[in-house]
Image (cartoon, rainbow, N blue to C red; front, side, top):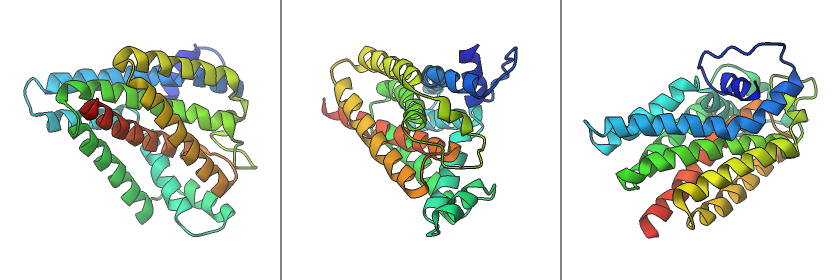
Length: 246
Protein backbone atom coordinates (compact mmCIF):
# COMPACT_ATOMS: atom_id res chain seq x y z
CA UNK A 1 0.00 0.00 0.00
CA UNK A 2 2.77 2.45 0.87
CA UNK A 3 4.47 1.94 -2.49
CA UNK A 4 1.17 2.52 -4.30
CA UNK A 5 0.63 5.64 -2.23
CA UNK A 6 4.06 6.93 -3.22
CA UNK A 7 3.29 6.13 -6.86
CA UNK A 8 -0.01 7.96 -6.63
CA UNK A 9 1.60 10.97 -4.97
CA UNK A 10 4.53 11.33 -7.37
CA UNK A 11 2.90 10.50 -10.69
CA UNK A 12 -0.25 10.81 -12.77
CA UNK A 13 -0.55 7.03 -13.01
CA UNK A 14 -4.13 6.10 -12.03
CA UNK A 15 -3.54 4.13 -8.84
CA UNK A 16 -6.26 3.18 -6.38
CA UNK A 17 -5.24 3.08 -2.73
CA UNK A 18 -7.75 1.35 -0.49
CA UNK A 19 -8.40 2.49 3.05
CA UNK A 20 -7.98 5.84 4.71
CA UNK A 21 -4.86 7.91 4.14
CA UNK A 22 -3.51 10.15 6.88
CA UNK A 23 -0.33 12.18 7.31
CA UNK A 24 1.60 9.33 8.91
CA UNK A 25 0.81 6.97 6.03
CA UNK A 26 1.89 9.64 3.54
CA UNK A 27 5.14 10.06 5.46
CA UNK A 28 5.76 6.30 5.52
CA UNK A 29 5.18 6.15 1.77
CA UNK A 30 8.26 8.34 1.30
CA UNK A 31 10.31 5.24 2.06
CA UNK A 32 9.56 4.22 -1.53
CA UNK A 33 10.24 7.53 -3.28
CA UNK A 34 13.58 6.42 -4.74
CA UNK A 35 11.98 3.17 -5.88
CA UNK A 36 9.32 5.16 -7.72
CA UNK A 37 12.15 7.24 -9.20
CA UNK A 38 13.79 4.02 -10.37
CA UNK A 39 10.53 2.96 -12.04
CA UNK A 40 10.08 6.32 -13.77
CA UNK A 41 13.70 6.43 -14.88
CA UNK A 42 13.49 2.88 -16.24
CA UNK A 43 10.42 3.77 -18.28
CA UNK A 44 12.14 6.91 -19.57
CA UNK A 45 15.25 4.87 -20.44
CA UNK A 46 13.16 2.30 -22.33
CA UNK A 47 11.40 5.04 -24.25
CA UNK A 48 14.78 6.63 -24.99
CA UNK A 49 16.12 3.32 -26.34
CA UNK A 50 13.07 2.82 -28.56
CA UNK A 51 13.36 6.35 -29.93
CA UNK A 52 17.00 5.74 -30.85
CA UNK A 53 15.90 2.96 -33.19
CA UNK A 54 14.52 5.66 -35.48
CA UNK A 55 15.97 9.02 -34.46
CA UNK A 56 19.29 10.55 -33.39
CA UNK A 57 20.27 10.65 -29.66
CA UNK A 58 19.12 14.28 -29.09
CA UNK A 59 15.58 13.25 -30.05
CA UNK A 60 15.75 10.36 -27.61
CA UNK A 61 16.79 12.73 -24.82
CA UNK A 62 13.97 15.13 -25.65
CA UNK A 63 11.35 12.37 -25.70
CA UNK A 64 12.58 10.90 -22.39
CA UNK A 65 12.58 14.28 -20.64
CA UNK A 66 9.14 15.13 -22.01
CA UNK A 67 7.85 11.78 -20.77
CA UNK A 68 9.09 12.51 -17.23
CA UNK A 69 7.39 15.90 -17.23
CA UNK A 70 4.10 14.42 -18.42
CA UNK A 71 4.06 11.32 -16.21
CA UNK A 72 4.72 13.40 -13.08
CA UNK A 73 2.35 16.20 -14.05
CA UNK A 74 5.35 18.56 -13.84
CA UNK A 75 5.02 18.22 -10.06
CA UNK A 76 8.67 18.95 -9.29
CA UNK A 77 9.09 21.49 -12.06
CA UNK A 78 6.21 23.47 -10.57
CA UNK A 79 7.93 23.35 -7.17
CA UNK A 80 11.16 24.55 -8.74
CA UNK A 81 9.50 27.53 -10.38
CA UNK A 82 7.56 28.51 -7.25
CA UNK A 83 10.72 28.21 -5.16
CA UNK A 84 12.75 30.36 -7.56
CA UNK A 85 10.07 33.05 -7.54
CA UNK A 86 10.09 33.10 -3.73
CA UNK A 87 13.80 32.83 -2.99
CA UNK A 88 14.86 35.39 -5.58
CA UNK A 89 12.10 37.86 -4.81
CA UNK A 90 14.25 39.77 -2.32
CA UNK A 91 11.33 39.78 0.14
CA UNK A 92 11.21 38.80 3.85
CA UNK A 93 10.67 35.16 4.77
CA UNK A 94 6.89 35.44 5.26
CA UNK A 95 6.46 37.12 1.91
CA UNK A 96 8.65 34.48 0.22
CA UNK A 97 6.30 31.77 1.48
CA UNK A 98 3.29 33.70 0.17
CA UNK A 99 4.89 34.06 -3.25
CA UNK A 100 5.72 30.36 -3.35
CA UNK A 101 2.09 29.50 -2.58
CA UNK A 102 0.83 31.70 -5.44
CA UNK A 103 -0.16 29.52 -8.42
CA UNK A 104 1.05 32.16 -10.88
CA UNK A 105 4.61 31.87 -12.20
CA UNK A 106 6.94 34.87 -12.35
CA UNK A 107 10.01 35.63 -14.42
CA UNK A 108 12.41 33.96 -11.94
CA UNK A 109 10.38 30.76 -12.04
CA UNK A 110 10.16 30.67 -15.82
CA UNK A 111 13.89 31.20 -16.18
CA UNK A 112 14.68 28.51 -13.59
CA UNK A 113 12.42 26.02 -15.34
CA UNK A 114 13.95 26.72 -18.75
CA UNK A 115 17.52 26.48 -17.46
CA UNK A 116 16.93 23.18 -15.66
CA UNK A 117 15.31 21.48 -18.65
CA UNK A 118 18.04 22.85 -20.94
CA UNK A 119 20.74 21.66 -18.53
CA UNK A 120 19.32 18.12 -18.48
CA UNK A 121 19.14 18.00 -22.27
CA UNK A 122 22.67 19.31 -22.77
CA UNK A 123 24.21 17.08 -20.09
CA UNK A 124 22.58 13.96 -21.53
CA UNK A 125 24.08 14.96 -24.87
CA UNK A 126 27.57 14.97 -23.33
CA UNK A 127 27.36 11.25 -22.58
CA UNK A 128 27.68 8.24 -24.88
CA UNK A 129 24.21 7.38 -26.18
CA UNK A 130 24.49 3.89 -24.65
CA UNK A 131 24.84 5.38 -21.14
CA UNK A 132 22.05 7.94 -21.34
CA UNK A 133 19.44 5.43 -20.19
CA UNK A 134 21.53 4.60 -17.11
CA UNK A 135 21.85 8.32 -16.40
CA UNK A 136 18.07 8.80 -16.58
CA UNK A 137 17.52 6.00 -14.07
CA UNK A 138 20.08 7.27 -11.58
CA UNK A 139 19.00 10.90 -11.89
CA UNK A 140 15.32 10.19 -11.22
CA UNK A 141 16.11 7.91 -8.26
CA UNK A 142 18.57 10.35 -6.64
CA UNK A 143 16.23 13.26 -7.26
CA UNK A 144 13.53 11.55 -5.18
CA UNK A 145 16.12 10.61 -2.57
CA UNK A 146 16.86 14.31 -2.10
CA UNK A 147 13.21 14.95 -1.22
CA UNK A 148 13.34 12.41 1.57
CA UNK A 149 16.61 13.87 2.83
CA UNK A 150 15.10 17.35 3.05
CA UNK A 151 11.92 16.12 4.73
CA UNK A 152 13.89 14.07 7.29
CA UNK A 153 16.45 16.75 8.15
CA UNK A 154 14.46 20.00 8.26
CA UNK A 155 11.20 21.19 9.82
CA UNK A 156 8.18 22.20 7.79
CA UNK A 157 8.37 25.94 7.17
CA UNK A 158 4.69 26.86 7.24
CA UNK A 159 3.45 27.27 10.85
CA UNK A 160 -0.18 27.00 9.77
CA UNK A 161 0.45 23.75 7.92
CA UNK A 162 0.03 22.94 4.26
CA UNK A 163 0.04 20.16 1.69
CA UNK A 164 3.55 19.13 2.72
CA UNK A 165 2.86 19.15 6.45
CA UNK A 166 3.03 15.36 6.62
CA UNK A 167 6.81 15.59 6.21
CA UNK A 168 7.15 16.19 9.96
CA UNK A 169 6.65 12.43 10.36
CA UNK A 170 9.52 11.52 8.02
CA UNK A 171 12.61 10.17 9.74
CA UNK A 172 15.32 7.50 9.90
CA UNK A 173 13.18 4.69 8.45
CA UNK A 174 12.43 6.59 5.27
CA UNK A 175 16.03 7.76 4.87
CA UNK A 176 17.35 4.22 5.37
CA UNK A 177 15.15 2.61 2.71
CA UNK A 178 15.82 5.35 0.15
CA UNK A 179 19.56 5.40 0.82
CA UNK A 180 19.74 1.62 0.51
CA UNK A 181 17.84 1.78 -2.78
CA UNK A 182 20.16 4.34 -4.38
CA UNK A 183 23.26 2.62 -3.01
CA UNK A 184 22.36 -0.75 -4.52
CA UNK A 185 21.18 0.87 -7.75
CA UNK A 186 24.30 2.99 -8.22
CA UNK A 187 26.78 0.21 -7.48
CA UNK A 188 24.85 -2.21 -9.71
CA UNK A 189 24.77 0.14 -12.69
CA UNK A 190 28.18 1.83 -12.64
CA UNK A 191 30.13 -0.07 -9.96
CA UNK A 192 33.28 1.59 -8.56
CA UNK A 193 32.87 5.00 -10.28
CA UNK A 194 29.52 5.13 -8.51
CA UNK A 195 31.38 6.07 -5.33
CA UNK A 196 32.09 9.46 -6.90
CA UNK A 197 28.37 9.93 -7.50
CA UNK A 198 27.48 8.78 -3.99
CA UNK A 199 29.81 11.40 -2.52
CA UNK A 200 29.12 14.33 -4.83
CA UNK A 201 25.33 14.14 -4.96
CA UNK A 202 24.65 13.86 -1.20
CA UNK A 203 27.14 16.69 -0.59
CA UNK A 204 25.42 18.89 -3.17
CA UNK A 205 22.00 17.94 -1.82
CA UNK A 206 23.00 18.82 1.74
CA UNK A 207 24.30 22.23 0.66
CA UNK A 208 21.23 23.04 -1.44
CA UNK A 209 18.72 21.92 1.20
CA UNK A 210 20.60 23.87 3.89
CA UNK A 211 20.52 27.03 1.78
CA UNK A 212 16.78 26.82 1.07
CA UNK A 213 15.90 25.90 4.66
CA UNK A 214 18.01 28.78 5.95
CA UNK A 215 16.20 31.24 3.69
CA UNK A 216 12.64 30.27 4.63
CA UNK A 217 13.08 28.54 8.00
CA UNK A 218 12.57 24.97 6.84
CA UNK A 219 11.22 23.07 3.87
CA UNK A 220 7.96 23.06 1.91
CA UNK A 221 6.59 20.84 -0.81
CA UNK A 222 7.87 23.39 -3.32
CA UNK A 223 11.45 23.35 -2.03
CA UNK A 224 11.48 19.55 -2.04
CA UNK A 225 10.38 19.61 -5.67
CA UNK A 226 13.04 22.20 -6.45
CA UNK A 227 15.68 20.06 -4.76
CA UNK A 228 14.62 17.05 -6.82
CA UNK A 229 15.01 18.96 -10.08
CA UNK A 230 18.37 20.47 -9.12
CA UNK A 231 19.74 17.14 -7.87
CA UNK A 232 18.75 15.50 -11.14
CA UNK A 233 20.87 18.12 -12.92
CA UNK A 234 23.75 17.56 -10.49
CA UNK A 235 23.53 13.80 -11.00
CA UNK A 236 23.65 14.18 -14.78
CA UNK A 237 26.61 16.56 -14.50
CA UNK A 238 28.59 14.10 -12.36
CA UNK A 239 27.68 11.21 -14.64
CA UNK A 240 28.75 13.18 -17.69
CA UNK A 241 32.20 13.45 -16.13
CA UNK A 242 32.27 9.80 -15.06
CA UNK A 243 31.18 8.46 -18.44
CA UNK A 244 33.69 10.54 -20.39
CA UNK A 245 36.71 10.48 -18.06
CA UNK A 246 36.62 7.03 -16.44
